[in-house]
Length: 74
Image (cartoon, rainbow, N blue to C red; front, side, top):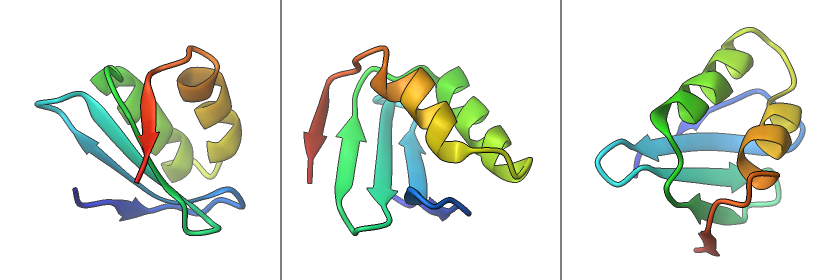
């Protein structure tokens, strides 16, 4: 999955596969996680937050981690 770099102290890059609703996140330490069943609107919000220069880590925690989407570490 192709990921786009983001400016964040927590996340390095973010990708999304619309067909499977899978969000792929690379953290600054190099760990990569895939989150499943993530709506496209959550990905769009995450990227909009990054584009606006707002806290990507905060958005990620509130809209991806807190809801408890199933995930796997790659």
